[in-house]
Length: 496
Ligand SMILES: Cc1ncc(COP(=O)(O)O)c(C=O)c1O
Image (cartoon, rainbow, N blue to C red):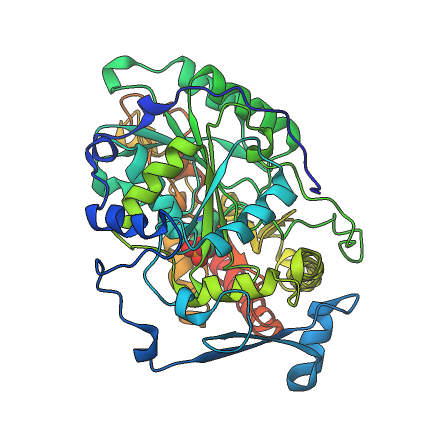
């Protein structure tokens, strides 16, 4: 049973999207032999140097997880501290468990152990019901995304992303010789008409037309924006028309909120339809992670893709990270077993978790109204998902703000304003005041003056800051108080 549904796929040949590197990559020959041990039961192996489990200095791992029997398990878990009800699970060599330790901690398959792979496949089927896709376990989304970039990216390629994008990821393929084309956004995320325009007007002299788009559809990092279903459908249709592969990086999928006029996000509030659930061609590579729903240090996630891309990802993993790490795979397998949380318990946890983040968002926004909006020097965009608030600094009100830079410098392509310099100063003042906050500049994809629309360059829109409500109430209180004070002082200075 799943909460999503989709029609059967019409397989489309997407093999032309592979990079030269992916085409040249040879399967790991040792792993090919290793797989033969599963050819029939009771195969004897003298083939692999697998340390025998009796030599592991470990025979049992116990996990004390939150109980999910309660109506709002996250609130009970937080409030109860060490005495909150818990659910104990075990991975062991000798005691009964779903994935014995001797299997979980042994070398294994690049896609992950079959039991753990089944767990993420069940989760994917339940929430997205993709037609004809396969899951490959990863070491989290960073690992998954960068593997997709290697699979698809050729030196000289252009990839597409939001003009403000998660730079931890967009910086990575630069070293592969890939360039980014940023698409304009509004409060609802990427503007589909802008995407279509960029692709339709693509000048072949610039290189081949982009064939990959990287998107964070829910609670985008850094802007917090969420793509509506209508935009998702429009973007998917554009991807079909221009033959794009969509890398759907969705770590905040489970943190989708009701609007702030609701006191909380109801447990029954549905999750938005993912690109994966809309995919009929196999052109979506969906990237999921346990980082935001369990813990980032688990380093566990998964990619859902068509079978062809799955095979290539496994071949790559078999020769690089080898496989996802054992402890995480053992934990999720126990969690989903009949004696664990099971899928219903996982679902209760993630729905309760988003109610908790809804409370944190409300706390942040109330404080923001009191400490920052009052100054009338900045305003917050309310995020529908995720853990970030995108703060617009009303930089035009600054006494030293200038919008005539081009006239002064006679440069027709550069920024028109001095927003960049003023925001750099503001950032330094925040640091002096004791506050670290993310400046928009580190997320901006720079445009190519030769080709991109330079009438409205991104440098003139750097007057934003990214703040998170993931931390403690104390950090939010102190941080927003400092921000309000710094803004007041920065804007009240005399014109030099
Ligand atoms: C948009 C986005 N993608 C990926 C990641 C990294 O996720 P992981 O911890 O699974 O590598 C983050 C973490 O902040 C993120 O915000």
